[in-house]
Image (cartoon, rainbow over all chains, first blue to last red; front, side, top):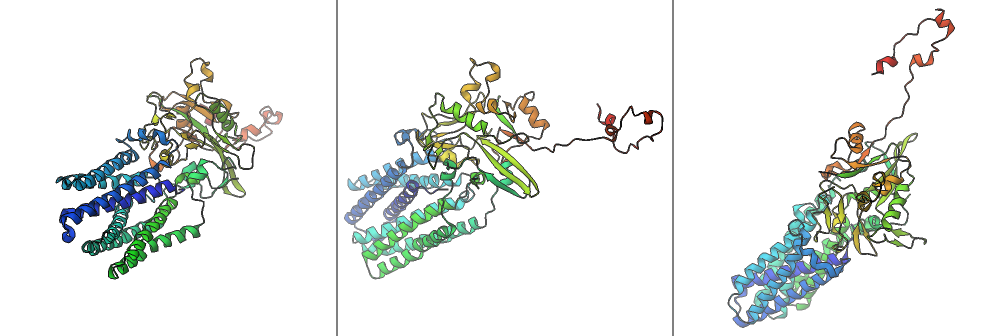
Length: 313
Length: 242
């Protein structure tokens, strides 16, 4: 597939926002770090605001994917059948939840655990919807796997936890930095395993469709001599990344480095040396790595329609 | 339940692209608006087409066959592009099974094109909506036209009659009979989309010559008994006669 930057930014930004919110809610739930009420309120409000801004940026990015953004409201209609429609509903619900959570902390209401629980549920639903948009297309075998769901969940949570670590350090709440960093490490390591598993799975995939089944002629040797046009079309633009296998391989090893070992090292240094700069570098290294990871996720998916467009003439 | 569809005879398609141009002409002149043409006379011409003819070479030289393969939307009975549409712009008509896009509802998210394994949908870069073969719904349902012309433009244009049009759920229709009698098949059956359009396979064209065809029945020598009767080892004409 041709990677679309609007979708890459949408999925990575809301992933970080969702992970960050889960970190905040978890902190409140078990009273992590034993914060005083004033510190706790200040941190949870700031964190909610950051999560809200990130998901709003993701929402804005998603509009750039549409041919008719002014009709976007229509996309909530088919939630019974379409995961995309479900995501369109789940994202604003999650954002509303984060807003209410932050606002009720800001106003000092006592019902925050309840709002937090509802928002956490919306957050998990949103993870499922986002991942199922891809995992539910059975023709794209690279995506049609439960690992897609696991990876979206774990990578989003890891990214959000890294951000939570940075925010805790910036807010001067040193009691939170270490537990956050440990959780971020655990999530990143877990995501490293599951993302590698999906890479291994995809490398071993055997395409279900062949040129034989595409045109229905059972002969081992079929060569396309003409695709019917020379100037390109939607079919030749949308479904192939148009890059060399070397570049794809570089991006793969690049994201494997940027998402997992490098940010972990930076974060360890940042925690040991109590350096906010290193934690800052850790989060953004991982975020850029996740952009590459998402680009590769799209580029790697091989659409069966490409079988019909092998040779111009 | 009616399911309108095309049956394409690969045995007689000559790859002339008349179906492609007639499709473009009809659908660009319709009420739904023009099909985009970007830079049509330049170096990189580009545009939206609902139908394409592709060419494949099957086999190893010298035993090769050139197969011309027209491809348009297959109007699946279980279309995977319809349930994924977030707005309901993509739908399958209950009355005749045609899969259509409501251009006024489409937000141009392209998700339906991802969900079509055949690459049958094309995003229109000017109108910013998803477009596809409509099976000339504005022709086939137009009662002002004479019945013989209520067919898709591509079917009417085909000079070798390689495109048949009809209801594949009616066992008496031309298309159902062609599918049943000539081994009509579906594309990519592995995905369970059950495409309505079928393709008829290539057939070996052969002439069977019987020994008796080569004999002159009124040969005087034979009449006089001076030529021996031919040994009939092969089945004769009467063996095939019904």
